[in-house]
Image (cartoon, rainbow, N blue to C red):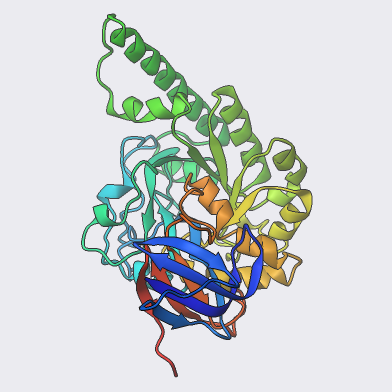
Amino acid sequence: MIAITGGKVFTVTQGVLEQGTVLVENGKITAVGEHVAVPEGAQVYDAAGKWVTPGLIDAHTHIAMNNEPLSYPCPSTDACEMSDPIMAHVRAVDSIDPFDMSVGKAREAGFTTCFTGPGSVTNIMGPHPANVIGGTGVSIKLKTANRMEQMAVPGSQQMKMALGEDAKRYWSMKNKGPMTRMAVGALLRETLYRARNYADALEKARQGGKAPKPDFKLDALVPVVRGEMKVRIHCHRADDIFTAIRIAEEYQLDYVIDHCTEGYKLADVLREKQIPCVVGPLLIPPHKSEVWGCRQDNPAILERAGVDFSLSGDGSSSTQWLPFQIGYCMGFGLSFEAALQGVTIRPARVLGLEHRVGSLEPGKDADIAVFTGDPFSNLSLCAATMIDGVWEYQREAN
């Protein structure tokens, strides 16, 4: 048994304990409170003067898929398959490298769980290619491992889709559709239409009818059109977000808006429709036109509007800097409570893992971060990170 004692404990869902104790046994949290007795023989971690939080969660990354350290101008990444606009059948699990340096960097910043998956490629010499449908990502625990299966959370796959500049400019330069936002939307609708018909044919075959011709791409979309798999729709501009909403409602998708860079322009719609959003990156140079509207008060505006949002670093090693980016956004009005929820319980819900991670409660996974102070201050450091009851990182005292 491990006892973390004397720290300021932020449970996220059950308030703040000024001098709390967290007990851990067999990879699970067994007790949290201010008057918890420490069993004899327990290994004690003295957190006096430190802040104890749930392990942080980044719900939009490409960790362990970018082959870091990156090489420019066009990095050798395994996070974007650029052979066709529709790549629904590719799976992030086949690109995850447990030894990628980004895993340890995120862990040293207090992160314990991330969603990693297909994305666009940052190419400073040209357009940023992205697929209209990019394949499935997966939630991973950032534990020390020598194979992907030790990290991936079973059943956590979600499908990536994209709208906007990344989805059209690259393919137009190759004289291959889509070339406009109209065509991106049409291709997405057409593919979902075919997938729905394919799913119907599979059901008829199950009842004794003729089986459809096998199609790997459509087969991967069957759980999407049946509402059994969540969709992550990547879009920055407000008009692209509206397109995402229209298409998702047409096909009754279970979906999340990723990036949501101009979410502040339609915060009332996002609240009214109760659409969860994963906002990020929070600090981004104007390297492509659709992020020119990026504002650091976007999270604060979404908070005031009552939007359900998480916060993301949108990268690989960039996750380690996410707490400091959040701290900068707090200067524009984002509250500490919303900031902490944005990297704990809210992304846990997006990933369907709120029963396991995202708060400090008995019965949940022992994923815990200890900080020298406010985790969003550039004067604080992560002192220790625990994943599934194992200390995966402990900072040496200076």
